[in-house]
Image 1 (cartoon, rainbow, N blue to C red):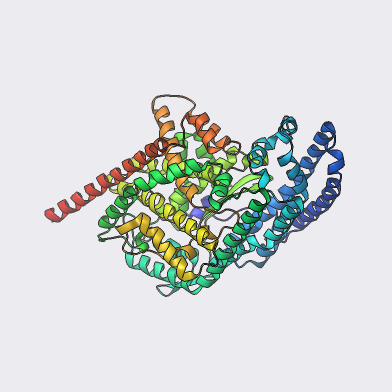
Image 2 (cartoon, rainbow, N blue to C red):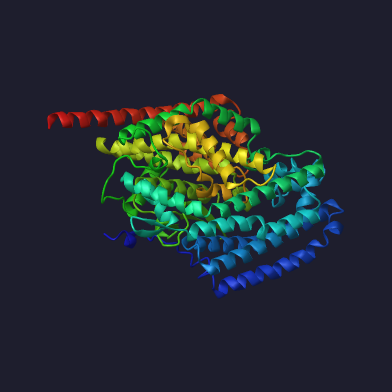
Length: 617
């Protein structure tokens, strides 16, 4: 059966807009611009209207109501343009419309800056009175969280300038990286490939092919390294200068990592507890790599082997339709509605997975604002790794779907909690596949768990260490390519130690996470999500195994609170635990150890079986 006839593999966004060049999009953009002009005129009355409490309340309610429609239009156009650019990084119209959407959103935030300043600096009693209103109170958590840093805000005019300049300044550097990654062309085995397609070859069962792909990827980025150096220096330089200006304004400087914790809605002590616990048990990831290497007949794993599959299956692949069915069944075993949702995503054309020449690498989940609908992007070519990546992104999508009826501000959860749903979904799928697999296939599932241990306990922390070093040295001046390579080698050495044959000094260029302009320290939330989700998974499955009813509903309730609570408060409320202590993270790491032990057991079974076959022959 042709899998394309079962589930489409390209997005269907016709009901959002017929296209980036559609009359409907242009009409909405013109409408948003007209309404923004009217809102700007209305905001001119802010000072006068806010002199008396009841008048202030009425005025601010009108601003919120007017702003929401404008923001929805800008959001939708931005998502549509980014989606088109993901499919084809060379699409000129996608770049144009993305720029227009960014400009609209920036102008809206500039227009609203005086109101934001007012809400962040009002006396507590006046602020609390406003938050008692149903409409304004929708943003109560976000505003209370931001009020903690209210003294770090620049004057309104300066804040407006920062917003305006960032559209074609800070964010332009991230756009340049994405464009660069999209147009890179590599040659592997005589074939010309895009970066996304070449990256998928790293999951090949053919080691020679993996090595060729890794060599081609390294060579391609070697030729573009100075461009990426400029991108990373510009992004981090911008952040550091803005932090200096904010610190000078308040007399209370805020370092980049503390700001990241604030954006991630976690306390610094929580991050420290997690990282220290992970470093103490980094041997788990190193042990996983060692066993994977031995199973492949390799003395030590190389960079080209980090995405290797358990068993080479030439000519075999998992059809997209089969992947959807397996994922839906695994989801449904925990929550039937979650399984139905996965099928709905595929049936409605909300997953874009078909390989294409100028496709961006990586995978992600995004969402439209009105209607609130998630979308998933990846390059699916039939590997087990592709299947798990699809499950990961569908976990994000399920999270977004559960929040669709909440106000926009409560649908904006931090990166730390974003990864909870995605890795929970991965765990569901891997566990289900392991249980249903025949003995000969179980190694592939256990392999993925071992691979996750190595990735999350070694690679992610190494990225975090590298970025800390980059920010520290960028504060002293421009950091060149030679130094960046040395910093990357140092970071990999601290975590991988002797478990790899060699390191990847150009990883800072090849990994787009370092070039995301909106968020610094983008990587540690993945480790947080991995360990946190394992903790949540263990707790919920224990309750389900004990016959407790409503476990799926409890999970939904936890996810619905992710946009309106800190991580610490969320865990206290829903699990009764304290993530600021090492004990929480050690419990999750114990589950990682169980997974590594399981891989040791199944790989030992395969090794003994191979010996028996040899003897009998």
